Image (cartoon, rainbow, N blue to C red; front, side, top):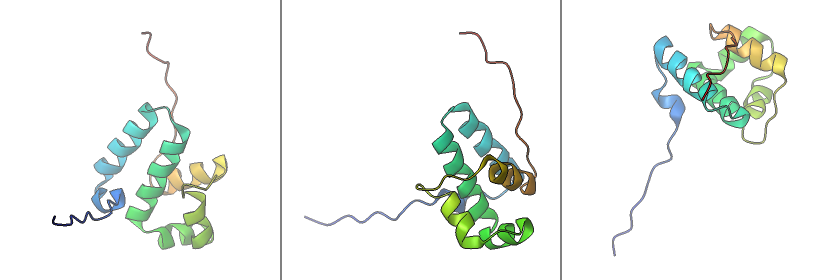
Length: 98
């Protein structure tokens, strides 16, 4: 039987334009899953260059990677700073009645 190999999927490789970032964040927020949202923000940060982002925010690159890893738990302040540096802000809306 022939062995099949599958490459790891890295979402960061597919987030290229500001519209990609916007739609990715929008979908992540709609899932209402904090861990998923943090993971997506990490993917977006990597797609834009984690080292430069860390420099812009005056943070440690390794610490920023760790904060948005599966084991990470970034502060709300860090999340807001990262989103701001990426050109976004959090917004709130009424939940639609079901």
